[in-house]
Length: 128
Image (cartoon, rainbow, N blue to C red; front, side):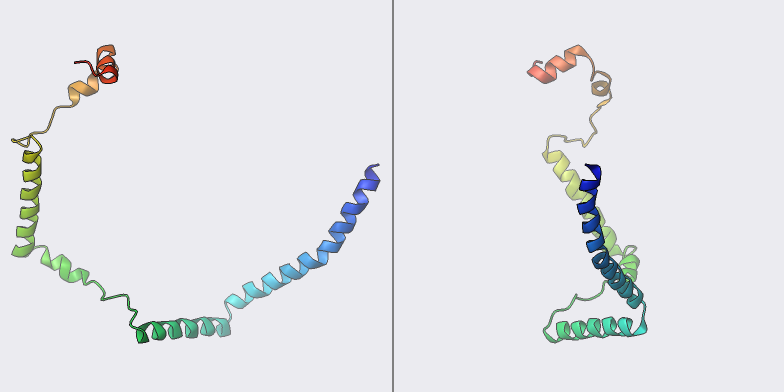
């Protein structure tokens, strides 16, 4: 019985072997072709052509950022004034939210009582 089942599987394996071997050879040829100078030049020409076509149609990536100028600008008066205004805006938001002194809340007692049964009851049932 086992031999009867093995015969169809053996036939299927033998018939598929040449196909998989051909696919492996094709893949190997493609892998070997990746580093060839002709392939590299073809890919480079294609990329150059795509870039020229994009520029011709007005599709650009924009101006490159000048990070050195931005870095040097950090010490200038305008950058310092902008940072100070940002801090003032943040403080105004804190005061508007009901913390006029801008003092941090003390969460240490709440952290200590997280597992306390009374705290759990207050959180779950909204009891004071």
